[in-house]
Length: 227
Ligand code: ADE
Image (cartoon, rainbow, N blue to C red):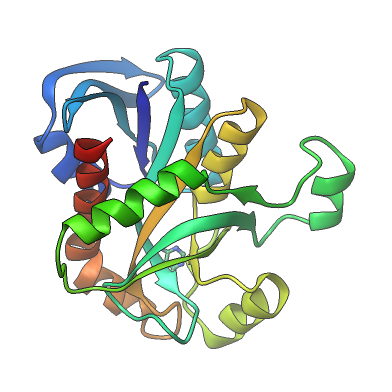
């Protein structure tokens, strides 16, 4: 089993890269793909860049070129639910696009508007959370909503919540889950809440980006150690 691990920003992969053994870099189409071992397991790790297109290119490259047979997206997100706050972590029960017409996704390939998290990866992540003891944040299995926009206003946030009912918003998860789905591969999105997707989101994001990215990465590292 080779795990394909994607973060959109360097902050989201740096802890993982620092923990890799037998690290080898493979530059391709403007992206560095790193192969090696993480937690003793074979991985390919990359920083995709932000947004759905970059994430989808990276995910499909990992599948076709590097033989990834599971995809995991790690990073930060904006919290849009009432029961979580900054630092807390969401695992993808499912992932949806908040900026793609659901009817069209259902009518045309891939004929679905939601991409489920893999039950075995979800169980492994929950086991890893328990093994971390009390890491200082809560864990929720919920819905992740993806779109090509940093959400930083109450109006936009409320509109997404009313249409999609997500727990958090980010910019890559659904594209990665979509790539996994069409190849029949397991996928999981892990996101730590860096902000509340409101008028204070930009300040909060820059304050908590690093510590939250590391929360998500440490949980993923523990998953791989236990896998
Ligand atoms: N990633 C982290 N915070 C986010 C936000 N508020 N909107 C979109 N992506 C994010």
